[in-house]
Image (cartoon, rainbow, N blue to C red):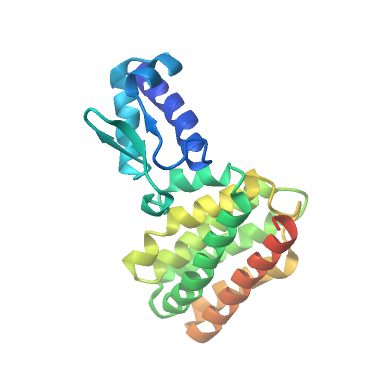
Length: 233
């Protein structure tokens, strides 16, 4: 695919994907590729490639002589980072954020406990560096810098758990944290106790204290849910 075709393909996806996840095309809706190609002013081959991507996310199914059918929400690949991003951009953002944060609260404390048992010296050092980076960017409305270190911190926790299933959730967590910042579902400056908890988690992991690492991470998750009650009720 040429650079121009990739640009057209991306433009179609960034319009059609959010429209489907926002419910503008309800489940069961049938979309015609030729009509879509005309609407987006792209070739049929570009349109077909965009549809293939949507099919890989299980948002649609393409059948000969039928067209492209929007699938029920239950069939969507809700762990796909792009699907998460599109859903967070829609009106259903508060429910989606809560659903994802509940998922994090179930997974990340256990991952932190495992990280305290399995993290390498390099991972412990990286975790400490991320936590200190969060502290350094926690004042003065530096949310972009804070986000960068926050995402890296949680990726290290998931990777250091030694569980490949947990590690694969790194992109999911990254999209949740990025979405909260992008859509202003964050305080202008992060909650100081929450920042401090990240530092304490890094310490617990470095010291091999699994119970403490798990308990502290659970506090972080509960705090995130409480923030959503205020910022995205």
